[in-house]
Each structure stands twice: as C-alpha cells, then as structure tokens.
Amino acid sequence: MTTLPARAPGTTLIAGCGKLGTALGHRIIAAGGRVVALRRDVSGVPPTFSSIAADLSEPSATPLPHADSLVVTLTPSAVNGGYRTALSGLTAALPTRPTRTVFVSSTGVFESWRGPQPITESGEPTGETERARMLIDGESAAVDILGAIILRPAGIYGPGRDFLIRQTLTAPSVDGGRMTNRIHEADLARALEVLLTMEAPPRVLHAVDEEPAALRAVVDHIASRLGVTAPPTAESNEPSGNAFDGTALRSVLGHLEYPDYRVGYDELVAAHGRQD
Image (tube, rainbow, N blue to C red; front, side, top):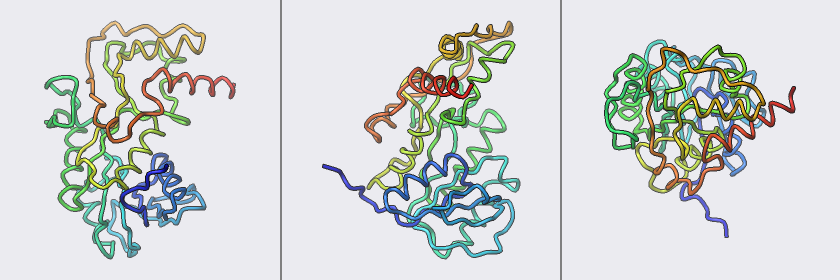
C-alpha cells in the first residue's frame, strides 16, 4: 500500500532553479504538483515547469505568483547583496508567505570546525571561515524571514557532476588526508521532496550518505574502476575536513538509493566509460 504524503505538493516556487531544483521539480510534477522556476536565465528550464526570469540580487519588479512551498537553492555567489537582502526582496514580491520553505545551505557551515566528530544536527557552526559565515547568515535570514527548514548537503555528485572522476584522471596530486562527505543528487532531491510534504519535518537536516571517507580512499576506488593509476597524495597533506553523521537523514528517508561512494561512483564510472 502506498503511503500518501501528509502535505500535498501544491505549487512550489524554486528560487535559483539549477540542476538540483530541476531534479526536485520533476519529482513534484510526477506527484501532481506545479513548479515555478525562478532564475536569471530561464532558457534551460524544462517545458513542464512554469518559469520567471529574475535576478534576486536586484529588487523584483514583477510580482510573483502564490506558492504553497518555497525552495531556496541560491549559492553565496548568486546573492551579491547578501542573503538577507535577496530573501527580503523575494518575500516582498510574493502575495503571501509560503506555508513551508526549505533553504538549501551546505555542510560548509562547519568549515574549520573544532568540535566533536562526527558532526550531528545538534552541532552549532561557529563560522570559522568567510564562506561559513556567509552560509550561516543565509540560514539565519531564511529562518527569520521565512521560518525556513535548513537542509545542509555535503558534496553533491551524480550524472553531470563528475568533478572527482575528472580530478582522478588529471590532477597531479590530491589532498588525500582530507575527510570528505557526499550525497547523491537523487537522494538529495528526494530529501527535499520529503521535507516539503512530511507532517512534522526537522528544523535542520544534514544531507550526507552513510560513510564519510578520506579523499584518498575515494580517489583510489574511482581509479581502480577506471583502470588508471590514482594521483599521489600531496606532499604537504595533513589530516583535515569533517565527518558527518547521516542518521537523521536515514530516519527521514528510510533508506538511501546511494548509501556510500562505492555505489554512486561505480554507476558514474560505468556511464563515463560508455561515453568514451
């Protein structure tokens, strides 16, 4: 028996609708909802989405339609005036505040973290780097202005996101001692959909798979699947990075389609071989 979501998808406005927003939008439409994509260039928006061309770093001159839900996927580089200015302008252009908003942040809020590992949702990021501080400011603005749920993905990978495969093939060396975390785009889009539709979503959720791993182990695995020699570890390499606990995400989703880097990268490497 299929369990119906506690909250109907309705109309979802996706601000900064790139690859992730598009993957989410397809899921929402398949579930019977409507998607409005808001981005600077709408030429690549799927025809099944409605679209509005807008630069959120500038005040909106066009009123936005009613939206039951709002998903904000803006990166720091896309909000030149800061997150608070962009989100205030976005809210002012909406006829009513959406009943649910998810702000897509990043586990980068914990850059240079000095606290306990693995990091859980109870950890309070302290903003040790400029990027971390920008992301924390964005989260704070999203909560203050929109009452947002905060979703923090780790490194996103999947079809069209093959940076690490290219790095394995071409990099002269890698930061092998760095602890890394990742999430497959398919699992991340599903997490977003569930946060929009579940009855009582968590206020903060880390989107990470089940196995943090040193970059050395991930690159070696990719190299073995490609049949190439892995780039060496950089001479100046020292242990760094963070490990995140993905227990909360699994409690929300039940399971991950791509629970670790081996499952995900084996599929990507196979697809890479078919393209050659």
